[in-house]
Image (cartoon, rainbow, N blue to C red; front, side):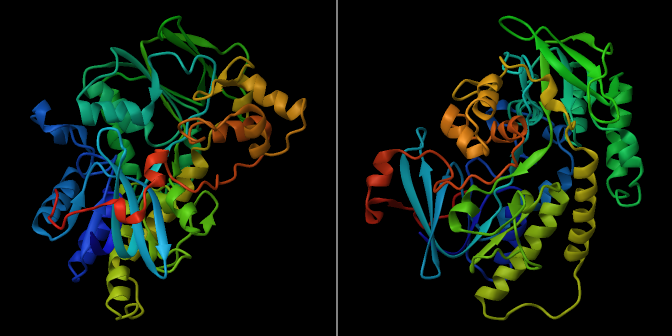
Length: 463
């Protein structure tokens, strides 16, 4: 199939970009791994579940309705259940390679004149003793179960870690009927209060969540962290402890909280795998873009969490800017005249807020002190913290890649997405982007096929 613009990702950024570009005459195809558009933020329950009030699980539901209705009324082609593993660039044209089918073994190719990466982000989770027990899941995983499956993961939950995501997760669990025994936040609320002006647009939202948690009698524990999850066959409780001003656990402050569910997260990281494969320049952990959301590779734009984690509103603004830029460049009209638009002003404000939030909700500085040697760090390859430390102390490894070669940490199915930050923290090495050719595992049979043997998507619209 051939299109003007291939948008990879059907979340807020991807949909905003697609609709903006399509409204300006660009043929747009959106490719997404989920079975319906919306991304993680607007994840929808399956129709078979018969959800009567799905809006109760969502923030900004009216925004989703506008995106959904706009998509239905547009000529945008949406290809769901397409798992993109590589974007190939040749002579200024692009081929988006994806896997289709239940086994993700059927190759599909989409040809485009331009590509927009709206690949979103993934959760940042740090290990601690007991974190592999059944009943321990990520904060985003708990939210996905609620939104997508209408499932409460347990009866008594603790939500822990750091970051703004903990508030909607704890609220969602409480509203759905779970007893939230505690909301354990390692950050100091005073850090947020010091930047009240920069966060003026975010504070009302946070206050709303706090009020709902108060009504459900959820106990907040700030400047605390989970030091251990307990249980044999599954989670039975957690021990939490207070942190001092330097981020170290204060002795004698541990307390046990019974629970059957622990939803834990320490923020988000940008998905940059496809950008890496294309050779796009990175700015720290995110894709570097200019004022038009263009990457360093001509013909490639990026928007949303892949350019820096900042939330759905920022992703929408960036998507709108990118879609407008793509349309102008493909139509040969060049950039618009000088002067900031509403979307650009929103982007500037929300990027500043995101920087403040990232600083205020950084993980505890000394989290590694609580990671025992027998704690699994790489779950795919079952590598312990002790093995990682031995690679550094015993074998002289001085970087994450050498630790990976010595221990196999990061060589499993997730390719280090879950464990790479933890390995970097345990070794004292800086986290570096993992340069891998493909964004996901690919069957050898697919790689062996000639390009003409790969399936071309039909021209009909799929939504």
